[in-house]
Length: 229
Ligand SMILES: Nc1ncnc2c1ncn2[C@@H]1O[C@H](COP(=O)(O)OP(=O)(O)OP(=O)(O)O)[C@@H](O)[C@H]1O
Image 1 (cartoon, rainbow, N blue to C red):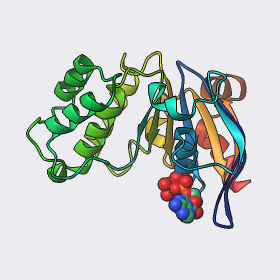
Image 2: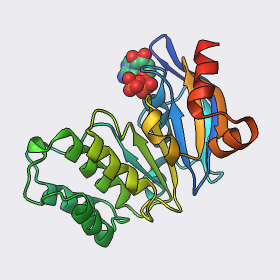
Image 3: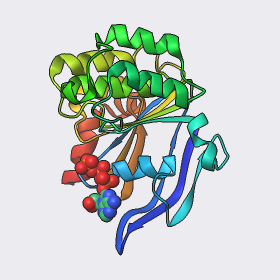
Image 4: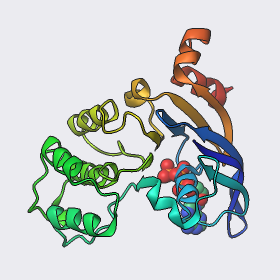
């Protein structure tokens, strides 16, 4: 379980996260939802230790992990971090050399599934193919948790469908996944848990199925209540 306890974060004097607490379980897809600028990316970066926090704690399976974080969690950012001149194949080789948890078989499987070409340069990839390569990099690591920042943002319907199918496949099955989005419509059916963020604070956390069964409400219904009163 990934557990955030009263996490606070400031950029300069600006409070970006205030007392953020939530949990994300293994085997679940937890979705951090909020409009632009509420602090979703900052939460993921804080979990990865990519930005220091100013208070609170972050535990992975009950332990603060520090420098060993990459043995437990893969982080899929919303932009590609590899050099643009690199080919798809070279980027996979780089990941293989860098991470002991790299799973070559799974990487090859995803390369075929996403129909990516090994010889294509990163600079030449479409937005959808860039998102797919990013996902390939993250999901080919044998780790228990995966964090994905806006994996569906700005890509066409067919790429979205292809990426969505990954979420219901064995590639994700037993892992704990946290994804961020400001657009719930297309992915509501994929997610288990929702954490609503507003202005750097968690306004609600709930299980989608329970919400539907017990209150007859969709995630959109709850969002309307929270944001429009
Ligand atoms: N490095 C930084 N320095 C200063 N302010 C920052 C920095 N990174 C983010 N912020 C500010 O922190 C706030 C939260 O940003 P964050 O990127 O976490 O939001 P977000 O919910 O992920 O937004 P989006 O949906 O647009 O990606 C914003 O007001 C942003 O301007």
